Structure formats: C-alpha cells, structure tokens
Amino acid sequence: MAQVQLLLSRGARVSSEHTRLAQRAPELRRRSGAGVWRRCADTVAELLQGERRRRARRRWRAALLAVSLLPGWHARAALRVYAPGETGYRDAEASFALATRRGQQHSCSADDPSAQ
Image 1 (cartoon, rainbow, N blue to C red):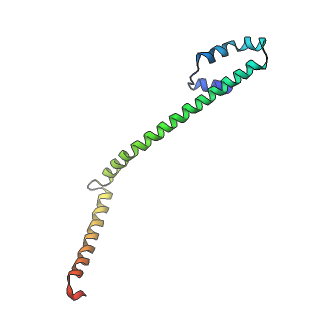
Image 2 (image 1 turned 135 degrees about the horizontal axis):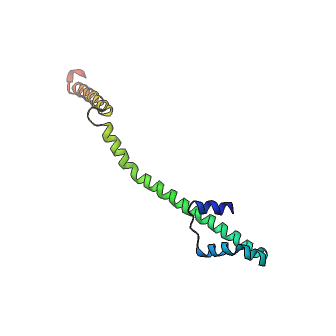
Image 3 (image 1 turned 45 degrees about the horizontal axis):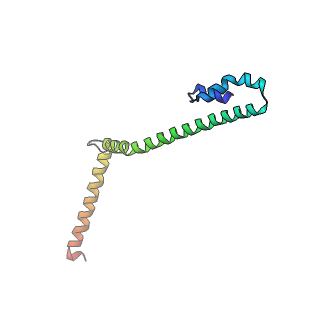
C-alpha cells in the first residue's frame, strides 16, 4: 500500500471504483477471504501500471518537445557566435581569407604557361 500512497501523493488519478473498493476494504476483509484481497492487489497493480504509462508518455512528450526545439536553439547559438566581432566571425573571416589566398595562388600558377 506504500506504493499506492506514493502514487496518490504525486497526483495519480484514481477512479471512483478504486475509491469505493478502498473505502470498503476493512468491511470486505472481515466478510471474505483471499478473493477480495486478490482483487485489491489487482487494483493496486492496475494503478501502478497506469501511472507508469502516464509517466512514460510524459517523458516521450518532453523528449519530442526538446527534439523539436533543438534546431531553433542551434540557429540562435550560431547567430550569436558568428555575429560581427565575435570569435566565430573572426575565425570564419581568417579561414575565408586563407582559402582565397590559396585559391588565388593556385589559379595564378595554373594560368601561367611558364609554370608548367
């Protein structure tokens, strides 16, 4: 029953049938044998299984939400890093300058017939 109390304290939804059985538990215990307690155990198991499913659905929703937000977060981070004056901008500028110098040197030697 500690699991049931834990679930209830964390907001587990309980049907009216579960509530009715729980309220009648002391009376049923006196009047009957193991069959009723087996039903109570089944009810507790259903409660636990239902809570596990709800939690799993919440985790999937949270993961899907995060996955859908990641591209936007990445784009904003890239805008910040490559903004003029920032580190990424300076690195990209230096890389571009180096590539254009190499390209000019390579194209100049290809155009020069004496280089062959």
